[in-house]
Length: 168
Image 1 (cartoon, rainbow, N blue to C red):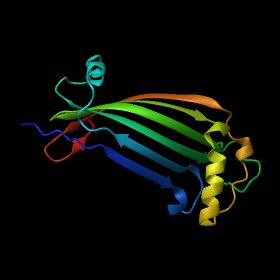
Image 2: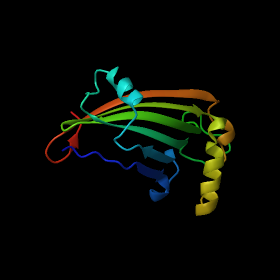
Image 3: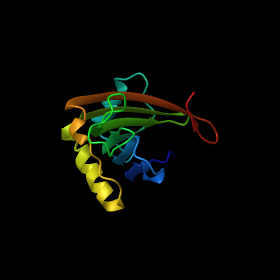
Image 4: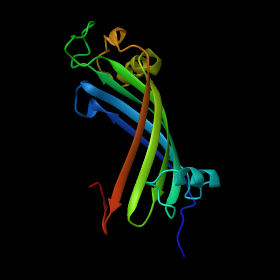
């Protein structure tokens, strides 16, 4: 009899360059995600059947996530960033995904919708974090990228061997 996981999974990831002692380029990110149990509604199974890369015999999960990424130039203490450096930018996003797990592979399709620019609240987040860890105040968020929508559609397949996942 085949085992099906009947519990959902919650994950939380945080990345910050404080561990490297610098604010430079990709400076911070967090993501909260939830994966449903392997017992999904029939309409999810029907949706998966529309795509040739999901096997009918795969155990399916739906994933939901929310996160934010921050990007800064090399020197955050300059009130006006250098034109040839990475611009200030925040990316605030939500994602929904579908995973299918078989004995030999794991397929993952994910749609991410978000926003870049002041609506992403990157400056507010970095100001708060820096006030908590006693780091220099970032000075250039007035020069961040303008508000723009973000759209990412990603597909990934991982093949399993006896010991681990690998991507060919």
